[in-house]
Every structure is written in structure tokens, then in C-alpha cells.
Length: 163
Figure 1 (cartoon, helix red, strand yellow):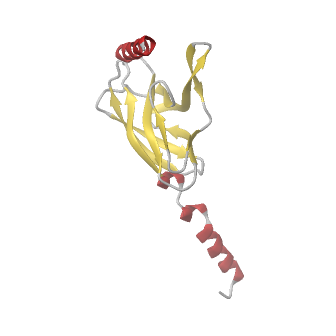
Figure 2: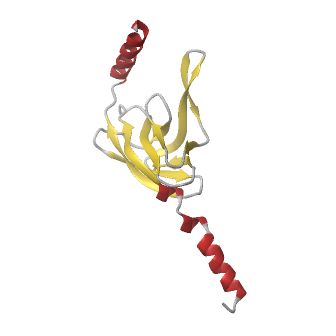
Figure 3: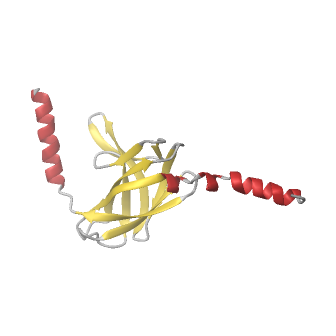
């Protein structure tokens, strides 16, 4: 090329991360769902599995939804025997690996709901990754019986204690 500026621009464009594959391109989302909540509640939680099919580590750094006033990345921690939710800055997704967002662990905290979440509906959410790329997903709203989960965890704990 005769024009060094065009040559430099082409070199930069072809070596930029956009052509290398963004996090949104590398990450596959499996089983996305959100917890149904009673009409008077304004907070729910979202769950999914993130599978990194790329060759570099990525991180989920944020999420947003037009139906939710605020979405935070959260985890549960054991604070002297009491389980507490805490925000996290990012959720690492290792190259070739997976990160599960599930009840009792990492999750999307959906706060200031703008509408009732009813089982069977879809909740649009956009995942935001460390490189700025975004991936739209739809969380299936599902019923979630907290008493059943608590009883199941209690039974599992008793079984572990008896062995």
C-alpha cells in the first residue's frame, strides 16, 4: 500500500479484539430462568449457566433489563454460619469452562421490578462482559417453592450427618 495511514488502519482493524471473537461470541448461555415472585414483591433472582467455548478467560461484569430497575451480580457467603447475599464485581468464566448461576450461589439479583413476573413468561436480560460486548437472553420465569428447596436441603444435610 502506498498510503501508510490506510495500511496502519487496516493492520489495527484486522488485529483488534473484534476480529478475534468477543466474549459475547465465545459465551454460550444454557437454561436461563428467573424466579416467579408474588405481585407485591419487587425483587427476584435470575439463574443460568455460562459456557466459555473460547480460548481466553472472560467475565460477566453486568446485566441489564428494560423490565428491571437494577440488576446486580450477587453471590451467597457463609458469614459465621449465616448465609448472606453479597454483590460481586464480576463472575469469571474460564476458557473452555463454565460458570453456574444457581440458587444458593452466584445469581443475578433483579431489583425494582417494573412488572409482575408470572411463570411461563420471558424476561429479557442483556449480559455485559469485560470486553464491553453484550449478549441478549430471555429468562424463562418459573415457579420456585422456597419451602421445598429448604426441605430438600434439610433432608440432604440429615443424610450427610447420618453417614
